[in-house]
Structures are given as C-alpha cells and as structure tokens.
Length: 243
Ligand code: NAD
Image 1 (cartoon, rainbow, N blue to C red):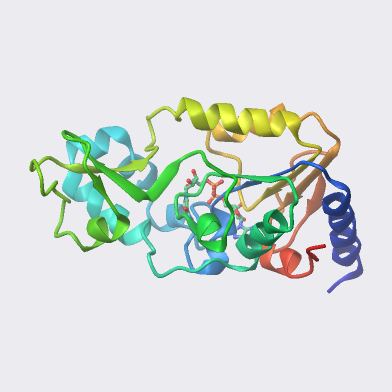
Image 2 (image 1 turned 90 degrees about the vertical axis):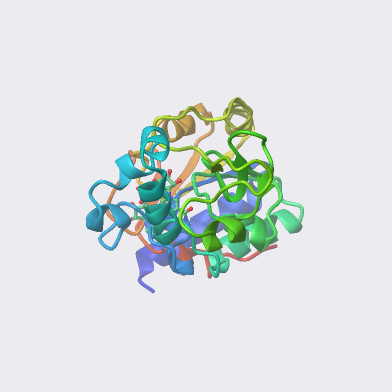
C-alpha cells in the first residue's frame, strides 16, 4: 500500500475511533465487490445499457411491465450476492456499540445481511414487493422466479417492487431519518457513490461537522473540506480496526 493511502486510512481510523455519531452514506460502489455492478463506473450498467434510467422508471413500469421486469430481474436482482468487507466492518462497528447510521442508496439488502440494523434505505429494497391492488407481500425469490411479470396469487394484479423508481418520490420517513442522522453526526463517510442521483445526493449537505471523508475508486473529488481517499472500499475497510 502506498504511503499516502496508509496515512489517509490512519486518519479515517482516528475519525472512527473518536466519533460519537457516525454516518456512512453509500451507493452502488459499496456492493461492486460483492459482484453487483454499479451504474456509472467503467463496467457499470449505464455504460452497457444507455436507457437503464428510463427502463427502471415509474412510467416504464406501467407502460411496459414485461420490459421492465426483464431488465430488473437480470440487472438489479443478485440474490446470491453476499456482503463484502465494507458491509461487514460497518456492521461490526455497530455491533461494537458505535453509534453508526448507514444511509444507503442501494436496494440489495446487503447491509442488513451483514448485520447492520440502523440502516436507512433511501431507494427501497428488492426484498419487499407488494401487489398493486390488494397489497399482498412477496419476497425477492418470488419475483426472480416468476415467469415474466409477477402476478399476485391472491387477486391477479401486478406485483411491484418496493423500490423508488426514477420519477417516483422518496418515502418521507426515509428522508426524515436520513436528515436527522446527518444533522446529529460528527463524522461523515461517503463511499461508492457518484452522487448523481437526486434528491439523495443533496442530503449530505445536512451534515454540519468537519470530519468528512469521501472514498471512491475514481478520481471524483467533492471539495477541499473532504478527506478524499481514492481507493476501493474493500482495500480501505479491510484495514479498519473495530475497537
Ligand atoms: P453509481 O453507479 O452512480 O456510482 C458508483 C460509484 O462508486 C462510482 O463513482 C464508482 O467509481 C464507485 N465505485 C464502484 N466500485 C467501487 C469500489 N469497490 N470502491 C470504491 N468506489 C467504487 O452509483 P450511485 O451513486 O449509488 O447511484 C446509482 C443508483 O442506482 C442508486 O440510486 C442505487 O439505488 C442504484 N443501484 C443500486 C445497486 C445496488 O443496490 N447494489 C446497484 C446499481 C445501482
């Protein structure tokens, strides 16, 4: 490991050790090392599917549910994926009585699978699905294994993922929880997100402290007030000690 990265991780470790209230604000880059592609890096979904943003949208879901589900099941549902070292270390910090809130834009449920409990899912989850008519619940396996468009076994209507599609508003409860956590935090770690999806990206401005870290493998700085660590999350979190 180069000397700069080593000293940056040391500083991050001191922020974590001294922090009383930490927010980790993450995105798709948190799960790439679990084998789930992100949207915007070189191997991301957007590079290969220019219309991804329009396919996983509210309008497209109702206009062409077959097209929506074909893409969604293939590109957004990785049911065999397992938490990686970043998910695990965040969960261990919480387990070790650190006050830590994970605010995620991800929909894969890997933070909870790793053991994190204090998680705000800004964009919902592939693991919750509801009938659009009677509200019956279905798990991710039901959706993934359904033939074409998943249909409610109780009333025959279309089942919709509890995922915030492009063109849909965020849940008020998640917005409030995220803002409250950020306002009360004394350390902010932003990781694996391009911060291009709004309004989620704007929430980090509710953080009032001065210990701000941005971890991203691409050179994509947020400003001089952030400690910018250009590295893979796995390379950084594998060095973080849970004390
Ligand atoms: P994004 O694809 O726009 O950006 C990901 C960023 O993470 C990129 O800047 C990339 O360089 C960086 N990155 C990738 N792997 C990394 C790693 N191992 N270490 C460090 N940095 C890494 O993702 P976004 O900002 O989260 O926005 C995409 C939207 O798509 C979100 O709303 C999210 O809900 C959704 N999405 C979710 C998943 C998932 O649930 N796993 C996957 C793809 C997209």
